[in-house]
Image (cartoon, rainbow, N blue to C red; front, side):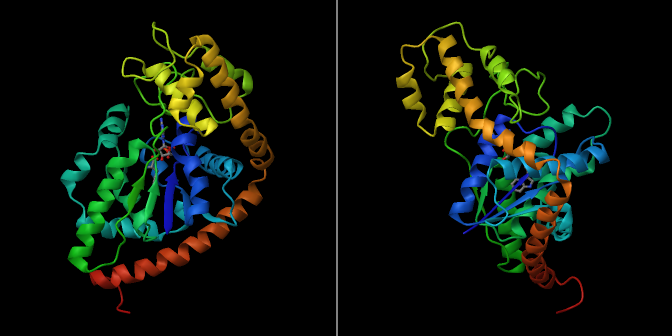
Length: 328
Ligand code: AMP
Ligand code: TRP
């Protein structure tokens, strides 16, 4: 089974990215042939700084390796090093409905937030994402809940392509975690934790120091009631229960049982302690890795070479099926 996912080199990675994405990428190495891409081309769809983009690409690579991605057991590469992605994205526009792109929630949300320019790239983003996955004839795509619609769209694109030009693509399945697919902002538990969210305090970064972790959980917004249990009226506590469940690798029900008689203060302290312990080794390994640009570049270059071998074979078939380019 082949697994593919992409992560943007934008901003600092937070607990939502970690739990919704990275934890699953690491697990994927055990379950199949795992391919992960740092999608720098997707990062150019909103305002960005070129020098910073380069830095954040290394930074993201270092976080992924620190979290447990092993270049010997997966393919880790930078999207722009494999030009087949952009070529395939264009070819897929021939079977992508304009109306479908207009319906994408992420486009609507992100375009509303842009101050200066809503780029055509932002609109086209889901097609490039479809190309990322389809180029590898991927079976499974581990992502958080916010990417479900994009995976649905790439399935539609694959199905339409296959029926128009012959069976070229595997129709991929999203793999969305049961718990933790949508980690919420600690200050505003009705909106998801995100890099662009309003409050720094509401976003727990993977590289936060223990004192910051403790402070952010201590100040996390809960409700005026009591009782450590999940419910639609308790978005803050529900979120913290999910976080603790994932970090301890137990079911949320078990967290509820254990803290049935605890107050919010004690519960939050327990979550902070567990998350601190959970992220400490990642932060340590990151500190050892991130400064060595040459070593990271070597990993990414080797990954790109392996990725390209797969993607170029797909592209040769696709070009042929579509009747573009020099005949084989
Ligand atoms: P990105 O950094 O936007 O490339 O996202 C990387 C991964 O993190 C994707 O699979 C997202 O679905 C996932 N993700 C982003 N925000 C959250 C969140 N608040 N909760 C759970 N997963 C998330
Ligand atoms: N759009 C994804 C996100 O924001 C990142 C991404 C790009 C991706 N290409 C992908 C995820 C391919 C899965 C598969 O999180």
